[in-house]
Length: 227
Image (cartoon, rainbow, N blue to C red; front, side, top):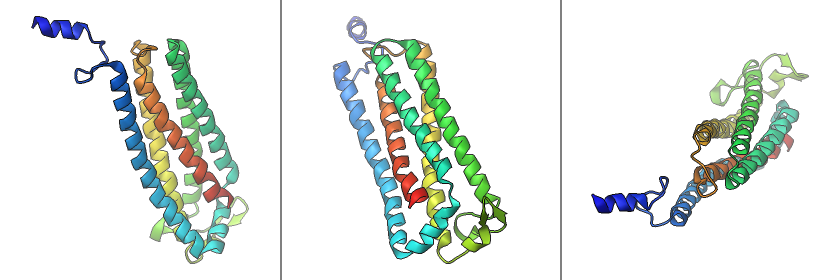
């Protein structure tokens, strides 16, 4: 019992017993996050390949179908996510400086930006659904809106474009929601003083995840909205 107490006293509260040092724990955690991010890259890579194949097969159809996507909304979401990456980086910076207030403020700003992204995506989706633009066999465009006669887009293989669009942006949106949950968790921990300049691993790892989410959108935006 005495030896256990001594060992516990020699370890910071955040250091797990199976690690010999904080540096080893941080390196192991970061390696685990990078391995996870590789699986995420593989997931989206498969979808990018599917998009590329169909784009090569039906370039005119894909270009015509993309006209129904509002590049201004996509551009707004791009700016929003870039801003959120900046606030995440600032949050990590303030954690390194033991600045709890700066950390919390930037984490909150990140959630605000992520919320704006989801709200914009909600209006994009509902605008499409109102005109029968659904993925798969439910693709039955109708009506007029935004200067478009939706029935004109009911052409062969247009449904494939919108299936890819909804799947890729939907899975990406799910990742954004997960990130928002993680940031909310980090805020509660930061307010309790769990992070210091010697321990901010969860903040940095969540930041890595969020940067990947942003990078994926930077590829999605031009592929789906601009070309």
